[in-house]
Length: 75
Image (cartoon, rainbow, N blue to C red; front, top):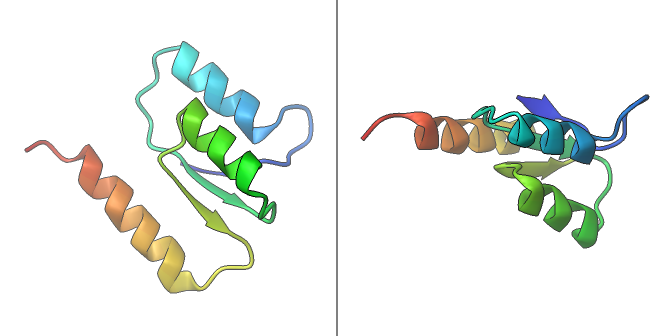
């Protein structure tokens, strides 16, 4: 799942918290224009698997997806 941190009705951090509290084992890549270290660290601490800062090079998001997908594969 790609997820922005700034959204109407609920923040990306809140979505992450709800998913993790519900036991959802979904991979989350935060894609956000908020390039503030604290916001990104909070998202990772809450359960995001990776982040990409907007605007981004398509190769960066592809690398993040490939990496997070690889973590999901059984060994």
